[in-house]
Length: 70
Image 1 (tube, rainbow, N blue to C red):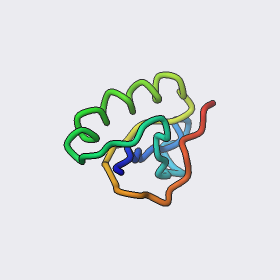
Image 2: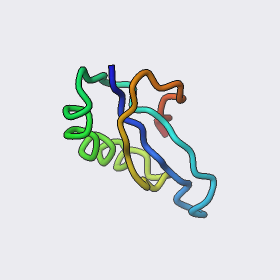
Image 3: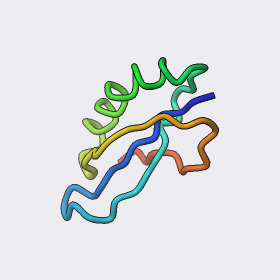
Image 4: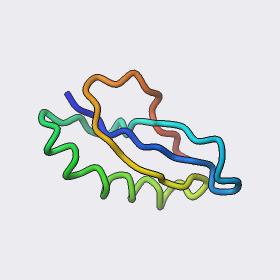
């Protein structure tokens, strides 16, 4: 299953960049994951203004921490 991975940085400094996964959904195909990734990441960013979204990617079985909710 594919998961959406986001690269985010602290908005206050633009530094301390990290990768997190959006744990709300897994996708059977990379195409479906990519199609939803920007909208889902944008929604997360709007609720978590402490971070600035840098980009997204889709990964199969990622061992990356879940995205925080601030």
